[in-house]
Length: 380
Image (cartoon, rainbow, N blue to C red):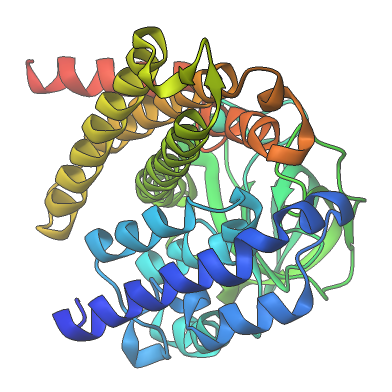
């Protein structure tokens, strides 16, 4: 589904103003407090941002992938933690339910996810399981009308605020076919949330361990059939990788704009540093790579909206865009020079923030494996 073009244009303009006028001025506050202010969260809910990807029939905006990415471009122009506030509701925390949920499951949960009344999280990673996601050890054992869930999940985004988790757990033998997906309310007995981790960047976006101790999950809360959890997870990650690629493009565009603004004001050797060719070279390289990433991301989104299988293309977009924004951030620090290393300008903060994009929702190395595997499968 897509919005009427005029309605969508109005949404983009509203988001653009919200980012510029409400979020960017408070980035330092968020980084210092490691919290997103409640008034900003309330405004995000009022704008419908928690329900961007939720179908309209369940109270969401029902944006197409292309439209969602255009919103992601705009949100890339502020601290990534701001987007993370609603990011799990839009992406990995809700999309398993959208893709594989029963009508009853959708009716129960999606309206509250879309409004932001309920925060969701996606629980796949474990202390000993990261890139090898088919090797999850958290186990779910059938006991009458419930599954007893036991294990620990690690680095779970928004876990301390979540009311609902999509959890991957082993119901069968080893390997991907032994994994099932469950909707697990946070208030069930045996669920315990760890303290937020101290991180390199993205302060304000919390990740925590989640512990399950014989948690009784109703059998009716299984997503899809038993043994289909890994397949559900991979479909969710295909989509999530594309969204993250869009955010990377937005951050890169913000860094380029900040670099240009600084370079046109800062003078050395009697003229603005923007007139020095080696500074221009860095700006040119960053702009070219950002344009290439934007074009790739929008092309893949259009393919996904057309119903094509974009597993390889999503991995390629995430790989290229996340590596690209790292290079752009590094050049931005260089353009700013000593000021880029000082917290007051915010460039060093973004430099740290973007480092995570090359790790979560599949490391760059995992993306390379996916790209190569799918390319070989397709014959080139």
